[in-house]
Image 1: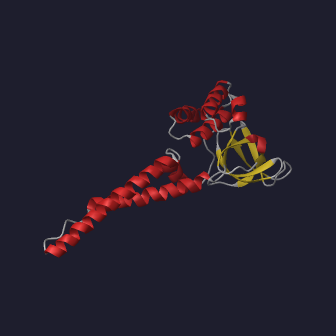
Image 2 (image 1 turned 45 degrees about the vertical axis):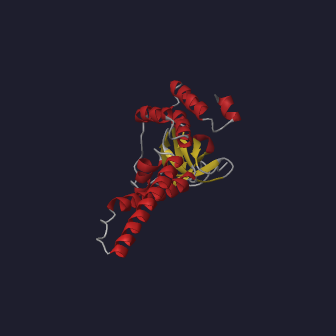
Image 3 (image 1 turned 135 degrees about the vertical axis):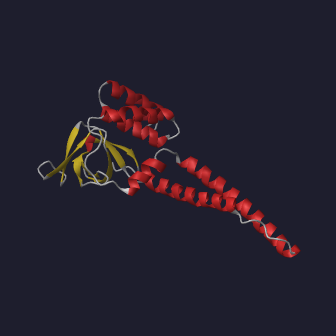
Length: 217
């Protein structure tokens, strides 16, 4: 599976199978990281999601103290579970449906004025579908924006986060296997990370696996 990924790094099946092997070897951090990348590449493929749901509760440390952010809650509930293509399809469908219904309504309204008849009923359903279009279009844009943010998963059992890119600087806090972080910037051997809602600091590149966003190295 590793050789397959060397040839095709976005091979979802190889990522999933390698993750399950790592889980059997007791490397839960690596398993979660590989599954997150596979799920990010193919949200509609059920195996990575089901495997994540099985493994994540088994992590020794599921999270560290942090402020719960509205954006991260929105991301976990609406953006991660669905693919970008799903939102594009919903946006296009709601756009054409609401457009056709609204045009039909205004046509009937114009005919009623012309023939001096009673106006058609208020277009509740077309407006609901139009609201769905605005909602889905917004989520589509947010999904695209979120896909550009570099994120990674901690693969080592425990890693100390430092204030600067060296282990002689001040130790800030610890991260644990399976935790997801935002990748800010990197130098030769270190990467600056942010645990959402918590502090920012530096960890060795070898302790984190990038799962989404633009590549930092």
